[in-house]
Length: 102
Image 1: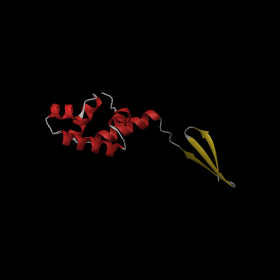
Image 2: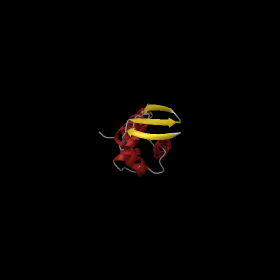
Image 3: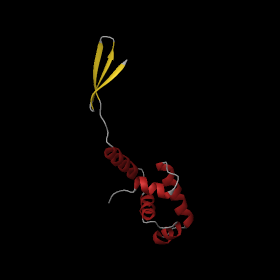
Image 4: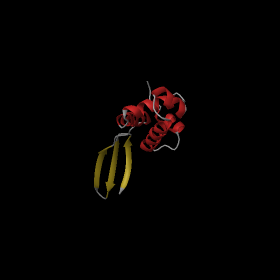
């Protein structure tokens, strides 16, 4: 089966004498980023959002704990949860990929 691009939104598939025109939706990088951001926000608990906002401000676990009145161990738990949910290996990668726009 041969594929021939017609435009960025159409594709023609040819197989022998059979020709099928298929509409193709091309997602831009901006749309993809916005969709990930929206999905990410929906998956977070209120406390995870609070911790994330403070990670974004480059606060340490100890500073976050003092600011929202929880233990540093609880902050560590929330940070781990955030990293796992978003497939990141560090808090800085998390901010870089998902530093939500205000």
